[in-house]
Amino acid sequence: MKLLKGDNVVMLSGKDRGKKAKILVVIPETGRVVLEGLNMMKRHTKPRKQGQSGQIINKERAVSSASVAIICKSCGKATRVGYRFDGDKKTRICKKCKSDI
Ligand SMILES: [Zn+2]
Image (cartoon, rainbow, N blue to C red):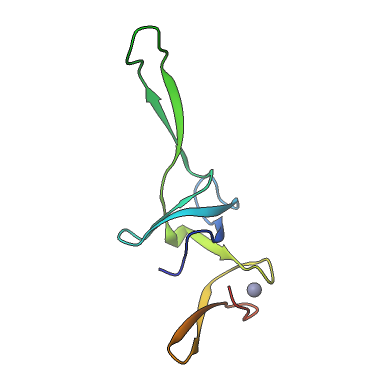
């Protein structure tokens, strides 16, 4: 996975295409990420007790990491992630401006 929690990304597909968001959760097992406030899913809950009303809860749903692109902090563009190696240390870099991400 090239994406990390807290990265700023832009959606490349779906109804939220072009919207920017922060990564809340990364799920490496499925290659998916959860974005803050995007790809919302409505959950309707029924009242459990008398006098309590039903609710509609908005919840973020995970999207495939292939449908998001990271936004570079230096050049501000949506980019792909490259790597720079310092010895055995791997640093993520922007493919466009070569700055560290
Ligand atoms: Zn850049």
